[in-house]
Amino acid sequence: MPGKAAKVVVTERQLAVLLELSKSRSEPPMLIQRAKIVVLAFAGRLNEEISADVGLNRVQVGTWRRRWQAAWQALTSLECSEPKRLREAVREVLRDAPRSGAKGKFTAEHVTQILAVACEPPEKSGRPITHWTRDELRDEVVKRGIVPDISASHVSRFLRRAALRPQRRKMWINTTEKDPAEFQQQVEAVCETYREAPARHANDGTRTISTDEMTGLQALERTAPDKEVRPGEVAKHEFEYERHGTTTFIGNFDVVTGRMFAETIGPTRTEPDFVAHVERTVATDPEARWVFVVDNLNVHASASLVEWLAAICEPDRPLGEKRQSRRAEITSEPARVLV
Image (cartoon, rainbow, N blue to C red; front, side, top):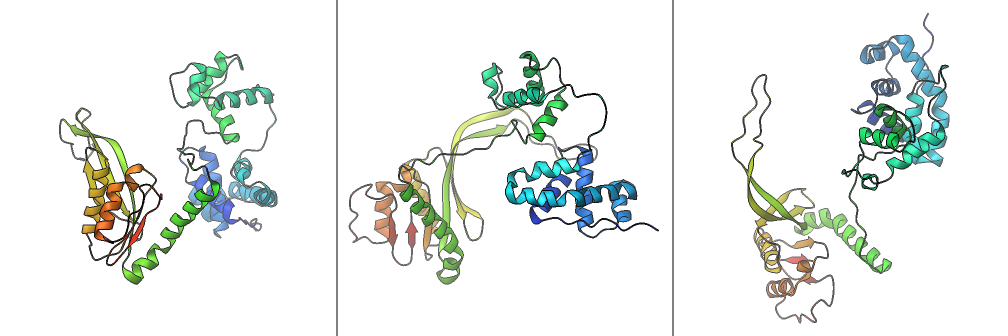
């Protein structure tokens, strides 16, 4: 009679990592296959059912169930102490166990130097690229004499084990605020505005809008129309195009409904442009109360905007000194505008 299958237990974070690996398009096929085994076993599937899904026999499925069961306690401890290492630890559990054979060609010093090159910008090596590819990185470490020869796939393996992705890049920005307390106050004000948006909309119809601009958009026109998809052929998009200068897009994102509306497309993003945009937006629902959330761009706190707001909300209210405050709030019925 068949033995009892090893019980598979996973935490919420471990399951998220396993699901990501099981659906990956860049991980090795065997690792994807083994991640699926653990996920299906956790879902209560029998070894026979799992083997049919992943293309392995029942004994092989049982092997990886037992491997996960044996490593689970250590993974859970690591998750509590060093959560950032969990992904790589899960990948390590799903890799092949060390086997006897020829001694590795690359020492720990070689690997460390290769990873150090991967952390450098390519321009430092005189290469006209912005991101390292595995082939460029392989050529560079050989050129520097770090190793006499190495395959690009072996370089990728070192990068994966070190959780380095030099081919990827994310945007980020430093705050220009010098006063941490003031910055914290602004962050809390914006977050509170977003948090209260659904309740305000339900209670009195207040429209909470996040508004921003995208400048320098190229206005391109293709020289020929697209060709639609046909049996045996994909849709075709004309490569050549004509330039018609650049344009600016000013968009409104409704925080409650999640929809864009009343966009403005024009050649510039000047002070009058933004005032006109706000005026057109409010005109779409003149009886509503409005809250606009914007950044600290100068046109978002211009004298023209303050004057327009005062004219429609509280014409008798003194305006005070120009740029006296970063955040101007003018309240009246039926409109409420927050900039």
